[in-house]
Length: 176
Image (cartoon, rainbow, N blue to C red):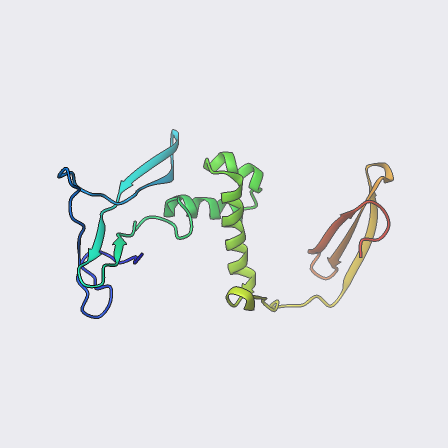
């Protein structure tokens, strides 16, 4: 199925026209799309009817794009920006889900895409981590007990800047 706008050509010489009416004369419409958007009173749902178009020559059909829909999600662009801003400020996925009115897996997908854009380069299977702008020269590692010695945690810290580089929980002993 093409994703063309009305009036665009599907291929060389193609002209996109509206699909014919149904047998009973009722206008044929494309699928309805429901999008989520934030509002003051909670969640708002937007329902959109998108007309379908067909090419008379090649027979391909297409549906108009929704200009305010976030790509890869069934949410609006303002809601995507709202979620990204709160995640940038340090909100957890669990806290963001009820705040934005979205399922946790949708918030997780948004966070994964945001972090992937920040820290990786390349596409598909050729995706690699970016080299850091600055590498730590002095590192410190420590293993300590949690909850009365039943669990342990290991932390690696950049001693010059004080940033935690790695933290892992384990059931006992060293984690690396």
